[in-house]
Image 1 (cartoon, rainbow, N blue to C red):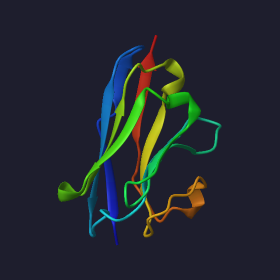
Image 2: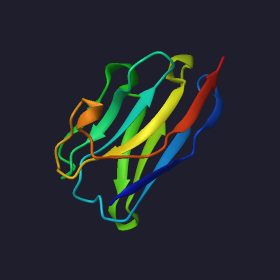
Image 3: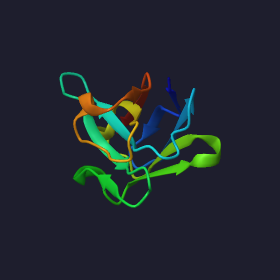
Length: 124
């Protein structure tokens, strides 16, 4: 059973940057679709970005295009989210997710593995 653990969240000022890390254990995610979701109070979990298992296709929600970047380091079984030019509306709990298959889905209920989440707060 794959377990995911996020780190790197925190408090940052508007315009600043943060890099989130997701460490996988209990199995390799090198061939798996991986993603970052986020949730704010009162809202559904939102797919922020996803990467297909063969790294041939990447998705970004419109609000983060040009500011966020997903990447992975297979040798370390890690996934990253670089967040630049942060805005107050990026404040949320960010979750790492992975699938058994190479394809990613927008619906959170279709993902197999989840981390516990890490809080990102952007202050103005």
